[in-house]
Structure formats: C-alpha cells, structure tokens
Length: 426
Image (cartoon, rainbow, N blue to C red; front, top):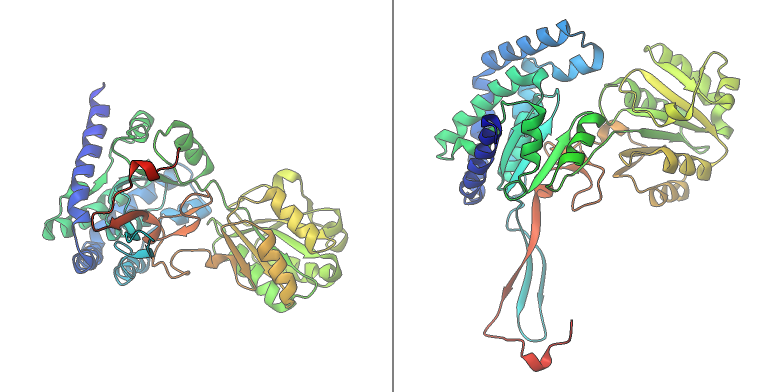
C-alpha cells in the first residue's frame, strides 16, 4: 500500500478509537464541548477569515464566479452565524439514550428501543467551509466521531476552522482524532477511505452531483445520498397570487445557488394569464432567465423554449423552467417525472388540494404556502444540518443530530429462557 493510503487508513482507525471517548460523554459534557467549539471559532475569527481570503483569491483566479464563489465566502457575519448554529445544536435535546419504544412482553421481558451513536461518520464535501463546523457539532453531539474530507477549493478555510475546533477538544480532554481532517485530497485517498467498511459506519457526501455519484460508485460503506435539488412550485387555481409571487421570488432569487432554491414553476391554466406576466416582470427585474413551454410562451411571448433537460435541471443559477398545467393531477405527474425527491411547494387556499398534493408526492420535504428556502435544518429546528437526504434509509430530508443515531434493542429479563420445544422452525 502506498504511504499516503496507509496514512488515511491510520487516520481513520485513530478516529474510530477516539469515538469511544466521545460516546462516553454525558449530555452536559457534550453541551460544554459544543459551547467551547463555538467560542473557539469566534476567538480565531481573524485567522479563519484570513485563510478564507486565500481560498477566495485562488477560486477567483480559477474563474469561479457567482453562486459557487458565494458558497465559499466567509465574513464576520457568516462566521458568527456558524458559531450560533453550533450553540443551537448544544441546546437541543440529546438524542443519545432516547427511548423510542417500550414494551413488556407476555413472558415478562422488558423491551426498549434506544438511540445510540452510529460510530464514525465520513463527511465528504465541497466548497462550503461552514460544513466543517456544522458536521463536527452534529456528529459529536450525537456521540460520534467524524472524518472531514473537504474540497481543495476550501482547504485553507477548513483547516483553520478545524484547528479552532481541535483547541476545544483538547481542553475537554477528547482526542483530536475524534474530529479528523483529511489533508490528502487525492481521489485515491478518498476511494481508500470509502472502502474502510470495518472502520467507517456511514459516508455522507455533500456537493455536486458528480461528487455524490463518485462516492456512491466507490463506497463499500453505507452512503446517504443527495444528488440534486430540482425543487418545484405549483401555483394552483385557488392560490393567493400575491402570496404565490412572494414564494416564487424568495425561492428563486434569495440564494439561487443552493439546493433548496426553486428550479421549476408550474402554473394552473386558470390563473396563468394573470400570474405569468406578473411573475415574468418580477423575476426579470431580478435578473432571472425564463424558459417555458408553448403555453407559457403564449402568455409571455419572449420566453426561451424549455426542453425536458431544463425541467430535469438543477440550475443553481438565475434560470427558471416554467410550464402551464391543466390541473393539479398534471402538476403532480410532472413533478413525479422530474423530481429529485428534495422539496416541492404548492400555493393554494384549498385544503383538499393541498392534502392531495402532500399525499401524492414522496419528496423529502413538501411545503404548503411556504417558501422552498425553509427546507433547511436550521429553519426546521435542527440547529444545523449535515445534509439533506434524498435516500430512503433511516433518515430522509434535512438531517440533524438525531439522524446521526440509530435505534437498538435493550432487553431486560429475570432469567427467562426460550426453551427448545417452544421454538418455531425458522
């Protein structure tokens, strides 16, 4: 084995050993650790922002622009927000030890299902230095150790933030290996990490579709996937059109480069004549390019023509696909065809229509008269998120600390045995 691959394996095994120290912390200990982590981030603000400036300069030199550059950027306000998110996690109920089911069986055994840590989580991500702190806080609070493998574009930011977090770990007497940062960013090292199925309990990729497919194809460990966010807004015939316009503008333009931004607008034919021209004026005033079907172009003549590729696209930019639909069922059929199972939104004042929309779609988050931008761990009360799962495993949608635990059975008895003669053939 090459020296670099030996290093990544040794790092992962050290992280596994350190996980025991994290799992041994009680709730008060974990909360104190996260409070110290938040304080350390702010104490080292100057160094973290200087490191981020290096990453920003290098990214700009490579031609990175717009939303992708915005994802990378840190400033004092964003860093404070990151620290606040860590503190918020510390104030959440501790998921470890929660009893989710309890029963006394006819033979007297006492059965409980109890939440316990997963163990070692490999977080593989791109561009967003806030993930370093978010993932660390959530994994540690759930009693896990974490291996952080960020992208080369944020290497200085991630390293500086991790150094501040390590300071808090040392002060708490926790091995810094419990929060391991991978500095070998080669593909070979990533593949080796993903194949350590005796060490790594779960891998969570967070980034572009290419990264997530690479992780999925090479992993021998379980992977929670989030390929992309093709989020829809359906404006129903019963919608409050002013409300619908607010949802559209917020969902598309507030931060177009994030996964919970709107990518497709569906409008009921009965309100399309009134709503689409208004929407076009509002969106174009904010720099949005519109691509529509023939019915949309009939109502807004200078729309570009939309293709199936546009309806399947996660633009991550100021581009929106538009379609006029005959009714709710056609809207549902469109979403079912093109959805990425992330977030869908309906604007309607009709309760039955809203209920049908919610029940008919299987996406991780479904909104009724609320912006898609609320599909976020912090906004949904998780404090922060380690990712948004579109994989139907034990976690689906925004993932907080609870999603980083699993349930096991704890059984207490008084000598009960299952006699051979009472067993059923298996």
